Length: 139
Image (cartoon, rainbow, N blue to C red; front, side):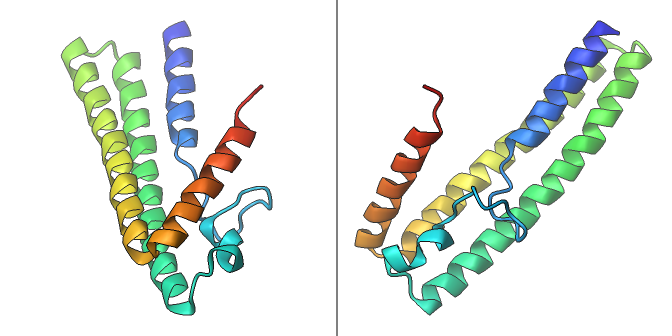
């Protein structure tokens, strides 16, 4: 039972670790690139391209998170049934592959954002990200 609880905790952590920073009903403390539209000088055309890109990415992440939840339930069933360890390992690898796909997609889309922004906007955006990332770090 203790293993199941640890596994459920790990699965919950994994599902929550994927940020939902582009959701429409986001909390005010979450800052996106759109929070700095004026500061970065983002044009209407750039905004449309960024929104389309980030909307698609969020839909992808949502779908992958749903799949992760389903796989987590399947994994729990395998554990409860004392299934063969190879089957458990296979399920964990399947879940891990999805996490890799999410990270890879995030990197791809980050590069696409870099193509939409001008070099000056990109440098300023990276500076803003570093500033807020440093503020979010525990002291």
